[in-house]
Length: 106
Image 1 (cartoon, rainbow, N blue to C red):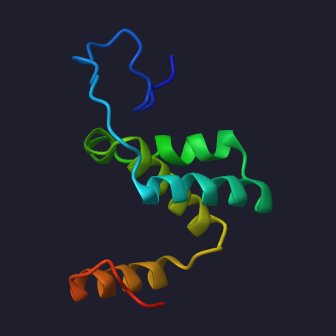
Image 2: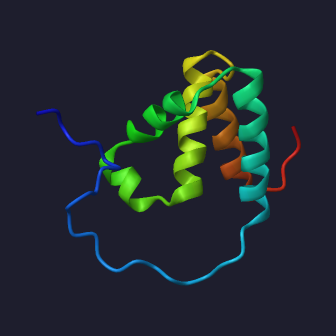
């Protein structure tokens, strides 16, 4: 039998289902728009995306939530395909974090 993926919770105790309603954040809406555009432009399939999300480290997957997982999966795919350079992304992220602000200039 094959190993279960991190997202395969069938038959496992998962705790209570959160029922809190919350508004979708602006960046989450932007992510959906960018994902729709990139899926078509780069011919990325749902299966490819799902694989990228399910390859997250189990501890990262457990600490994250839907949009964080989506963002991580898409970033992984864009790096795999060479659309984004991993080192350039790391450096730019550190620069933004070091500035103490998310309001940055490109």
